[in-house]
Image (tube, each protein chain N blue to C red):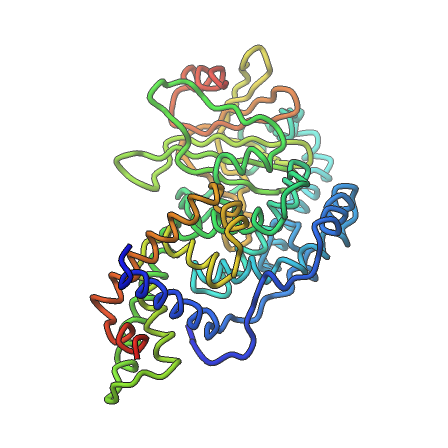
Amino acid sequence: MNLGYSDRRFCISEISIGQVAERDLILRTRAGDDRAWQELMGLHQEAVFRLGYLILGDADAAADVAQETFLRAYHALHRFDLDRPLRPWLLRIASNHSKNWLRALGRYMNTLKRFADLEFTGRSERRPAERKLYSRQISTLTWEAIRKLDPTDQQIIFLRYFLDLPVAEAADALGVRPGTVKSRLHRALARLRRIIESEYSELIEDARE
Amino acid sequence: MSTAERSDIQSIEALLRRTAKDFEYPETPDLAVRWESSRRPVRRAQPLAWAGALILILAIALFLSVPQVRAAVREFLDVGVVRILFAPTGALPTAERPVESEPVFDLAGETSFQEAQELFGAQIRLPQFPPELGSPDRVYYQDIGGPSVVMIWENPERPFEVLMSLQLLRAGAFLEKVAPEVIQQTSVNNHPAVWTTGPYLLQTRSGQLEQTRLVTGQALIWAEGDITYRLETRETLENAVRIAESLR
């Protein structure tokens, strides 16, 4: 995984499609209009792919998950509640499928190995002689700390901070109430704080300067 | 929460936002463009796999086009979407069959029971016998021309060893078995059924359709309504029928 400077920030809330337009596309898809479905895919595929990539750490696996997500969603679209936004539902399918993927023995071992290698390599690069941390190092260390959380904590952090989902949509994606999202997030941040304090104290010191 | 703790949480959030901003994603594949091909089971183009399936179909067609072969094949039996072609004992060569079982985690389409239920579009009934069976350990949804769900029960003492599998198929899916080694006609809930053996087509994670099996045992095939069932088990025929008739 490569953490580098990027001027482009992905923000789901910047997607400018109203609920009415999305509803229309869903209805057209149900009526057999494949172009409508392709248009919906175009609007949401980035979010779905990126969530898969955040969870799995592998572009090919994330692409597979994204493709499978849309295939499943297409077949289940007749049951989808039109009063709900589509994106959280897609992300929930993607999240479940990513977790199932991880459970598969071969990929689980590869993921462990991949992140174990990342940690080792990362640390040798990220212990500079200078005390001051540079932005890229801060992000890399923070990412390392995030990966030490359990998958449930990681997921809520990915949804809220990496995919910028509002609380209501994060709740929908997780299948819980908004209040539960807030409490889970609070616990995840607390656990992340403890990890950072014990293993990445330079991040706290840098942030306080 | 104390002021210091709140301040630290805010610092953590600032770190998270910075990390999210710096995070470099790979380029998103254009799935909308690939939608047509993504609707078919093979996700990663595997020309050889499709060629293999096509060859199999053509071989069967060619096989049956020979007058002597057609004469030798007495009849076929359709059980739901499964067609079983009979042959006189010893008159026709049998196809090669794999010896090993397919590792379960190599099947494509693993999902939750709830999602499989939604995708399948019909009620997925579960066996109630034996009483200690419980819910399936793994569930897969595959589109093999039509909806198909595969449920697997693993050996609790040996993970990834399949004790039993139950596959449900709806219209559109099509399976063909040629000259199985064992065949016996029976019934499930007064519906015609066959007790047979041999491999069948499953989609693996590589995207290939492969002739394989999940259990070294027999398969009970029957249809009820618009759903074809295939129960693969090491149990005897009597117990297999009992399992099949316990679906609720």
